[in-house]
Image 1 (spheres, rainbow, N blue to C red):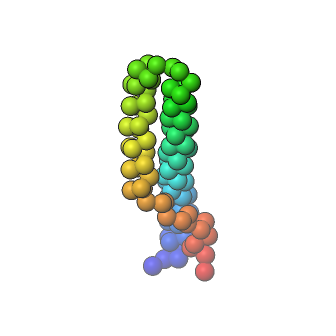
Image 2 (image 1 turned 90 degrees about the horizontal axis):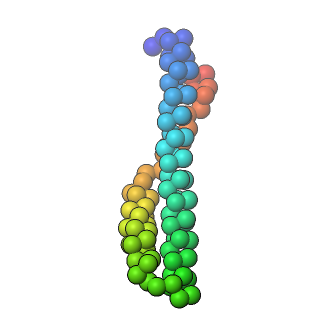
Image 3 (image 1 turned 180 degrees about the vertical axis):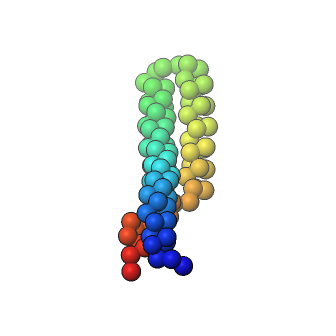
Length: 93
């Protein structure tokens, strides 16, 4: 294998692979934040019912929040953490 060709390959390959891995990690973090927001919204809906707001007004919203929470929990439970980033100088001896 030609060392210069390998080095050139690594210089092109590494940034692209790292960009894709960073994007995947960002997706997982956004799903975690959305799950936290969903939990807070559910807590607010329950508190509204306790405060006297008719439950029928909140029924659809609570149903949608519960469905999204189940979806997010499933996505996060099955999400593989992105592999570590590649070192930019991996072609160097």
